[in-house]
Amino acid sequence: MARKILLSAIILLMAFAVFGQCMPPDDVEEFLNETDELIAEAAPRFEREGIPEPALDQYERAVDFQENAWEMFNRGNIRGAFDHSRNARELLQQALRLLGAPMEPCDPPGLLELIENNYTIIDDLTPIVEESGNEEIANMLTAAIDMNDDANDAYTAGDFMQANRLAQSARHTLEQIRRMLAGHGGGGGCGIDPERIRAELERTDDVIAEVTEALGEDAPDWADELLNRANELQTTAWTHFDDGDYREAIALTRQARDLALRARRPEGRDFIADRVERELEATDNTIERVSPIVMVSGNADAIDLLEEAVALQEEARDDFEAARYEDALHKTNNARRMALRAAGMIEDFDPTGIREAIAHTQTLIDDATPTIEASGNERAIDMLERAIALQAEAVDDFIAEEYRSALAKTTTARSLGRRALTMVTGEE
Image 1 (cartoon, rainbow, N blue to C red):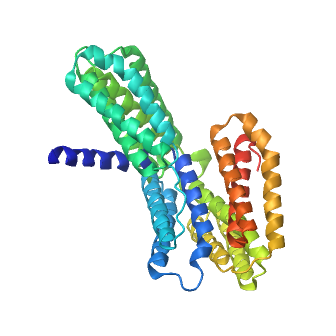
Image 2 (cartoon, rainbow, N blue to C red):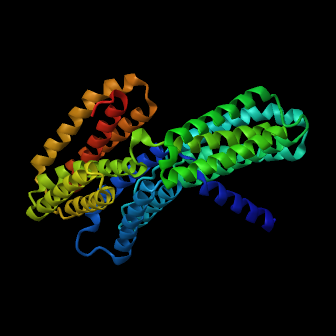
């Protein structure tokens, strides 16, 4: 029994460890941006006098983890970036709990989709497993169903970490079932058309050849490494195909193709340039969020610090245009930290300015809602709903004379509303 429990724990940890690596970079970037928003919203609470040392320590560790997350993201370490940003949220949650103000739980991007996709895979596998008559595989499928049901229940209850672990463990088990079915009678066919698989492998061969030719002899080291890994995976995929293991062959060739496409130079620019540009945009978003808080306050020191942040960000932009990417990265990260510190210096607020900020956000939400809802874009609609909920909290806080919180929430709501509108219109 103890061995079974230990094995289950190991499977859970292995499944969770690959979660960030499997996520698209755009989703991880959005996750990191949302963590920035959570930290920015919480920052003023930790800049006051008399903050308990344990709470302040956890908050500072959260900021450090988030900075490391962005550095990893900029280097292309998607899994590491997600893990560090997730840890930053957990540390921030702990810090807020020590202050008696817990943070609202936030589900990782793609979690609900993962659970739903697991059910789709279960529906596809069920008749094949029943036909196989293999009791071991049937028991594994039952376990996967139970884990995914529990994941769905945990998600509904708002326990996103537990939901994520269970859903990833269910997916891991389902992939095991697929591999086992591929190795059982029928040469692993299970209704798969070998010629379709061959066409997929040949398509990957073409992609690797095209990318290799496009990069030429001047390919950067990171691109060479990705292409080498792609070729290795593709060679293994052909070996599995020749052995009749078609499911493994299709999985490997798709991984190889993805690596080859990632190696392609983005429109002639170095890889780091694309990453630094994302970082610059993140700082722009932070400055946009905190500017209303600082300017409405009238705090001269905070305004000076924010102006320094804006000037440093402009220097970072100049460095970026001059291809001085390391300098640009260093300056934009510093500019973001300065902007957050400026927001944390605010203690007194002018209610009139905050009322105007709330009204401005409400106008934006009212104007954007018809367009976003008509688009049918689920991510944009979800973002809009979060903006509306935050705006409602901002109004409640304003009525309760919690002006700092009201301004932070309406500013974040405005940013979410703008991002949702941009997502469906393509216009900034």
